[in-house]
Image 1 (cartoon, one colour):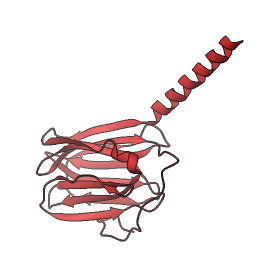
Image 2 (cartoon, rainbow, N blue to C red):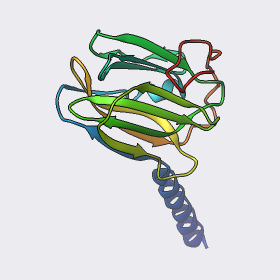
Image 3 (cartoon, one colour):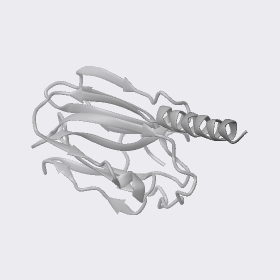
Image 4 (cartoon, rainbow, N blue to C red):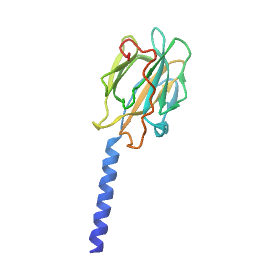
Length: 181
């Protein structure tokens, strides 16, 4: 009797682990291999993505920074161009990302579960489109490569832990061409 109960408990535990493991996925790395590697791994523990800053010039994505909960990641990339900042609404998450690249990233578009498109940059290049494998997953953190410009990006998807508080500020800052409030 105890053997069957122990076996049942072990099977249930293994099934729960397998379900959790399938909720996370990775898309990328999109772009070229130049620059220094960066990763925001661990910052997702501060909370969901609540804001995105992207520096753009006339041709490329120059740099980027992401806020997780109330904590900003380190800025990666160069200092040329204009800095654009977009805040996500409470409960809003990035569910798809697309972009274009040549030698460096040229465009980034973040699609949210609220139907907004947070758009940065312009130009032509190789197109990429990324979605999570799990329908309930959202963008949890990014990684990539950057130097004077952002040369590559990787997208890490997972479900949001239920204990994560909504900590976004009102969306009242400058937006890209299609990413307003």
